[in-house]
Length: 304
Length: 315
Ligand SMILES: Nc1nc2c(ncn2[C@@H]2O[C@H](COP(=O)(O)OP(=O)(O)OP(=O)(O)O)[C@@H](O)[C@H]2O)c(=O)[nH]1
Ligand SMILES: Nc1nc2c(ncn2[C@@H]2O[C@H](COP(=O)(O)OP(=O)(O)OP(=O)(O)O)[C@@H](O)[C@H]2O)c(=O)[nH]1
Ligand SMILES: [Mg+2]
Ligand SMILES: [Mg+2]
Image 1 (cartoon, rainbow over the protein chains, first blue to last red):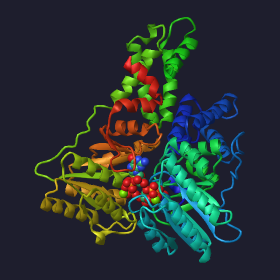
Image 2: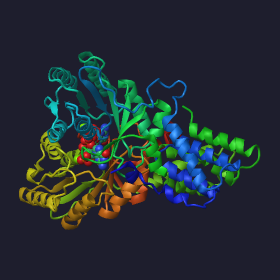
Image 3: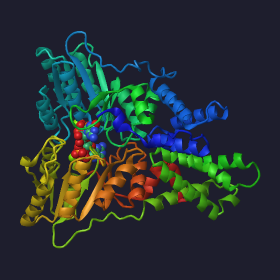
Image 4: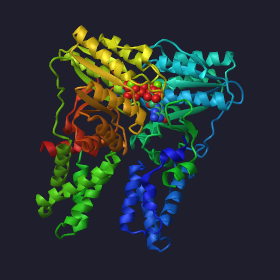
């Protein structure tokens, strides 16, 4: 399924041709934008932009307002970093590969966000669409059935897996996976990690340790650090992105579960405040349900 | 620590009213602070709207307008109203005679159903019950294995049937029903008095998978259906909670992952849209991290003014 289909919102019912902008219209717009989890601040900014232009007589009707929304949201998703924001390749939504040797993608996120399934999707994409030799690493040794879950995916997709028993040291699994990836001529190694809350310091340190091990074993690794966010998550996602970003220098977001009715508008705030780009979106539970994130398409799908 | 919200109220009233009297309009203005706080806590905007209006009416009724420093009373009204909305409290589990009592978990993907099944089983054992867990998630890879592992950790039996497991999307007609039915039969035979059904995560708009749940619901008539929801959910919580409730007649809500720093407005949204009581909250990954729901602390948490409100409520 395509982004446009699944993200279709009832926002478009607002934009019937001929409808003039008035206070009721502005309130309705505000509500629709809030419903997409864009956050009070961003919504205020967008509605103010519309109101100002309307008062100045520059715009009159609903389609004009839609143009302003489009422009504003696109601006927020692609704008240069705010002052003081960490420098990053913020509009860079490409995956980065190592020049030589295995590329390592570290995947993290809170409990149940969709990490393991998203890894299956990435593995599928890299193997089948890009012809890469892929290996996955079962560094979630904590959750019941986690190793088994990743093993099933690896088998279904036909990629290699490195795993230890449940309860093993996740950094040790990552160590072994790095060594195996090098000796077996793997192109991309994707490391699954246990779900953890961004507020759990000891678990965040464990994550940093996994990262450090990977960095020591493979030159330039991890080449990508993807944070998996659940699109149904509200404003807490900003705090998640902040803390994971500090612990493991997140390079991009994979926004999972966009096939539901949630819109994932909180990525606007994450882009604004932390300058972390969305790289992929998840649109279902099978390995094929993945797409690269295109701000234009996202905006069109939301309001088109 | 100072009462920030009260201060804000007092400040707003002071600047708005000058030295004259406070009007209804002033109260509405002041309520914008509360509105923002609630929206930032992910309470559904519709509920926020109704809530702020209710508070305004109450404030007028209680003559906040006539007070010199109306902040304290306003905060109290806001807090009381929030606590009210979250009630009436009913954290009981209703058992049937003859046993077994059948409890079904349902919810979106990754909400915490399977873990909560384990937690609930442990909770019931502590209350002298003898639960049987049933692995009726036949979709997610290793879901059966996950529940089996939890059961082993707890020393609680788990009914499984690996032959019924199917890949995602391929809902084997009747498979979930037959697994659940067999589990209930086993409970009867082995003297287990509660059966907890773990079901696959699914989107409320996925008609095939929702159909599977409806089938379990109509054919086996579980005595209680609990909707498991992630406490970090945003504005969409109302949509999914509403749909699950409409299709399954949910009996209670369980909000997970409250050990995070989420303000947890989704709890209020789900409670309001379904009208069903919150039974438990999940506060960790470990199997003892399940608490009976209490609204008082929750109201403070959602407002994001914990210590502050305590002063007011203790006074
Ligand atoms: N509808 C939908 N479901 C998804 C998507 N991504 C993952 N899921 C489902 O969400 C649930 C949790 O996914 P997992 O991949 O196990 O999540 P996780 O982050 O690895 O979970 P933990 O390891 O327990 O923290 C599973 O039921 C997945 O099938 C998606 O894009 N859309
Ligand atoms: N921190 C925290 N994690 C939790 C809580 N409840 C569940 N989890 C974690 O959330 C993740 C998902 O939990 P599951 O029980 O697998 O969720 P589910 O709803 O069964 O998922 P699906 O079957 O894929 O739909 C796991 O990593 C759990 O350990 C909680 O209260 N707090
Ligand atoms: Mg996982
Ligand atoms: Mg489950």
